[in-house]
Picture 1 (cartoon, rainbow, N blue to C red):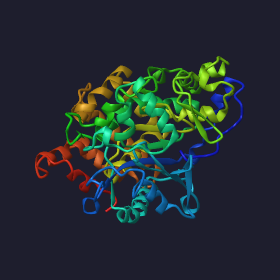
Picture 2 (cartoon, one colour):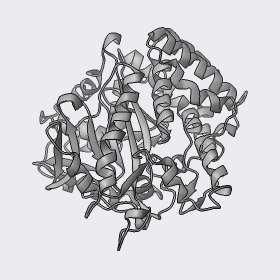
Picture 3 (cartoon, helix red, strand yellow):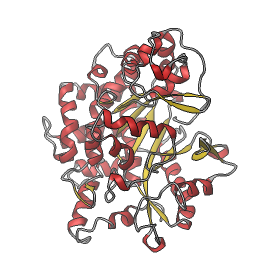
Picture 4 (cartoon, one colour):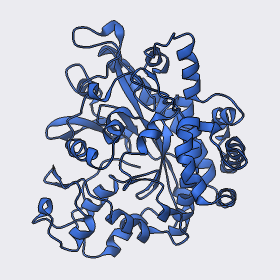
Length: 461
């Protein structure tokens, strides 16, 4: 659902064209699909480290790093994506059509999955991807661990990938928040992309899923370490997002309003500062410029002589980071990357809640028992406390109610997907989160040596 494509060069003549960009996402229910994206940190295997290649260090772009891994995967079914001549991703064709492999700023390796019909297909796709990278990664002396935050290495030790939009963001991020560079280089997430049938359906799903993002953050908490030590937080990734760029992230109050729809999202997007525009394959630094002023013909030096296109607006949409992002689908953005079964469970969770209209109506009723402000406040509380965060009636009680509804939604689909919720049920019932399990091992068998986490979380074994 998020594969790279050719930019639309149609000039923007009116605001209705921008609304139409979003409304093109409306699909009949029988065409709804599931798209899962997941990221993981690469690290140097100790037995293969030598010279400047330190044990457990994040691999640089080259030599013997991320570029070499992409090169090893490139072939008839995986076509190269380049930026100024640099190999920065792969687009799937043939049996991998609809999938893409891309790089986050510090080389976090991401699979953007194809739109699939069932959660089982999501699981199979994930397993196949891990198997695909395992052999080439081992040849290069690399492992990969899906964790929410880089547990060992400082920001200054993280490499940067030669992707031009990241150079622009790297310069701009410190101007708008204190933790933006940490977000870019030291976080990993798992996201699920889901469809909607109409503007009203989109708005209902947006309100419900935005309110429940803090709950999934708590259930999926998997980032308790930074710089080799516990942080006192269970989701350090979520903490980083609290001060990254609040103009384009978080839970905008506008999204909760009853009148919210495509037009309101467009208006919000137009007032979020830009990052870049692409012309002739080159990204032009327009960070801080106003898309709205550009549309109105107001002179802005980086954009001088350029007219905005639909492709520019579609690019701009990818630079917005609310907890639920609207493009031509809804993207759930509140979870730490984690164990494969947990990442698949998150996809099952949202499919169960959002893909049956009757269940969705009941979820909305449950969510509306509390004012939106409670969910917005919960986003900060779960960072440290996860499932122990205070919430009226108890967060675990809410989790159980919501999980029961997700199970109902999955049962009604008839694909046998409901068993994927099991690890989330365990946590709702009182089991430790992934983060708490790591902390237990850190203070126990690891003897406060966080490096063990790479081996135990490695999905490329």
